[in-house]
Length: 260
Image (cartoon, rainbow, N blue to C red):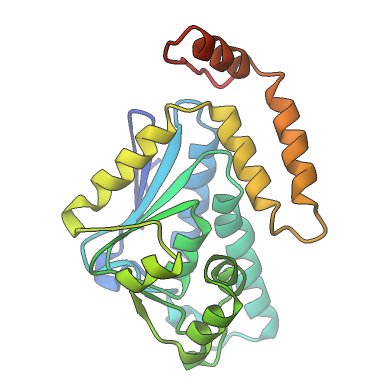
């Protein structure tokens, strides 16, 4: 399928999604979010895809935020719909996906851009990256899960400081805070994301999906994550991949997982 605002291609078992609005610093308008929903759901349902890497076109920005021009003139009900649709159709789809998603953060990741990166399971940043949630400068708060995911990643106090001051943090600061997993030179950004993804793709696919569900339930309202872990652990025993993994371990050979 051809997209206007993103680039989507699969190489090997990795599906690459690039926000392709470089002249707009890859800002997320509604059309881009709709295309992201389509690209993500297709990738998650494609048995040939093992994982997804999301990045932005160019070197200046991953995603510099939402397209604020689309917010002008909107009322309370419209604002609620914008946040709900964005969260349910894109950001929660990523976070709850059955395959690993890595954000390769090149340059600015602000507002909806940082929220997009935080929805991913792993974040790699280039050394020129700057991240923040500046919504209060517009009389808003983050609406795509930012208040929740930033708190989970960096803690309540730092999350409130970043949100209320609207200050950006550097890549080095983000690494120290636990907001990103790794910081590398710009030219090494995609290779580092691919290195991590390729290592992940040697592991059992069904176990990866189970791990994502269990970790997500650590923060799910009204859910006991320990119970989820027990159930997901038990289900793994019914997979062919489990049998293959144990056999390979006992036979001192490399496991060949098939996601079954």
